[in-house]
Amino acid sequence: MPVIGVLALQGDVREHLRALEEAGARATPVRRLTEVEACDGLVIPGGESTTLWRLAIAFELMDPLRKLLAAGLPAFGSCAGMIMLADRLRDGVEGQQTFGGIDMTVRRNAFGRQVDSFERDVPLGVGGEPFHAVFIRAPWVEQAGPGVCVLGEDEGRIVAVRQGALLATAFHPELTPDRRIHELFVSMVKGTS
Image (cartoon, rainbow, N blue to C red; front, side, top):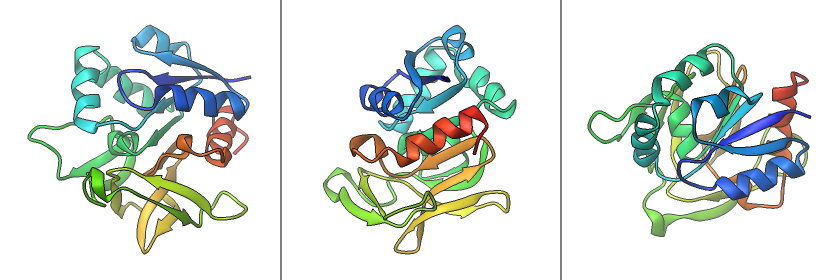
């Protein structure tokens, strides 16, 4: 059973822990580099991307996580986690940095402010029925590089991608009972997908 850490700096940590357990992994919150290094994969939860960036610097995780992701650590980012996995960022605050890893340009808060949050069924390349997606101040992918597999779009906007061992969604699958995305990530960590 793979051990998957959920970056517990801010955001939907408990929800991701529960979803990962239900998807067949042993999930644990992580805040320190030694905790991350003991994991087979990492989830970067939703929350607020500038807060995640600042806390990653405060916890001395920014550069080490960049190196671990570049070296092949499987990671899944939802919402703000998608932003943190993007190589390029639009509408970031002055100096905002990401962990990078996915050859994509992501626009922060692309769907609007908190009051513009919504839920919609989105066809995804993970099999079965469309996924009931929860978008909260969500980003979208404005440009995906040639090595990026687009897994889902909402009204022509890219909202789910995969590149190698990295997976990202603009929405929050941890807030639904549908575990297909977490199951996909667990299989990626196991090396079976």
